[in-house]
Length: 77
Image 1 (cartoon, rainbow, N blue to C red):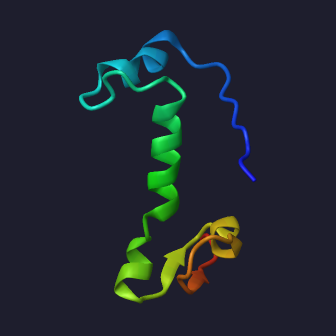
Image 2: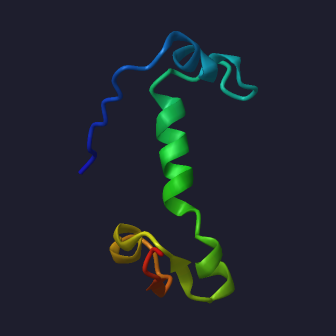
């Protein structure tokens, strides 16, 4: 089931950026963030592509869902 996303507090330059991008031409404003979210959702991480562990100090990233990489969390010093 499709979900709605609302983005608030966007400055004027950011709001106008999709209109200035090549290829965005006559795309409705809602189409640009949707296309970018779809691209991000289907992009694999470097760790997934190389089949190596994801090394991070960010415990939240290490526990995050949505990637297939093995995550190794190192304590911050």
